Image (cartoon, rainbow, N blue to C red; front, top):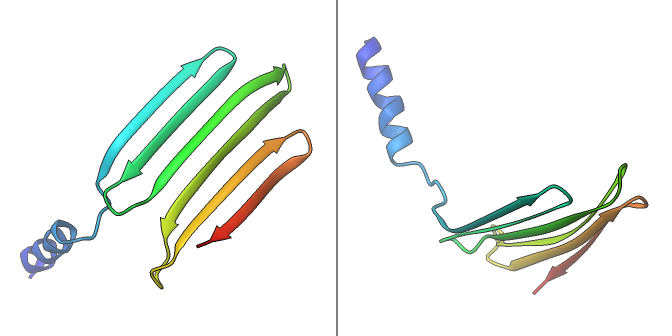
Length: 91
């Protein structure tokens, strides 16, 4: 019985809908960073950050994906000493 349960779990994992990363870029420096990645399903993420002073990192970025309803969603944002400021665009 245990074998059937373990086999069923492995079978479920094998057929799970896992996004495939098709592009990835990372850059980390002492005073800045940058990364981006994309999946075959249309999810895109990018973010840049720079050290403003020893206690503050200025960050800007965006991510986009297709909602469950099939609508493209894009969020751009900045984050700094004044907080996180997103802008959502539904296309």
